Length: 132
Image (cartoon, rainbow, N blue to C red):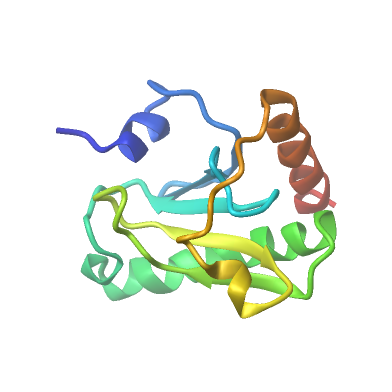
């Protein structure tokens, strides 16, 4: 059975796409810790990040690098935190979160419930800096 992320990648479930290549898909988390929180997922469905081969694993960070840089420009923060939790969806994924402290990566905190307009705004803000 395909994961929710595989359904997003296939276009069966709509998403706020940030970037895509032949290996990875990046989109906004619709229940983010903070505005600008994105997910990078491999298109190949694997459960755990460390099940990716070495080439995929290194390519994932290279793919995420300009996205994190764009997020830092779009959302004032000290840096982007990268986190691998992977408990909610059995499909490897990397969280990129604008943070000001380590506590901002606390995934037990209540998540935001942004409107469609807020998500579209976050998407545009990141895309503006990603293509600049």
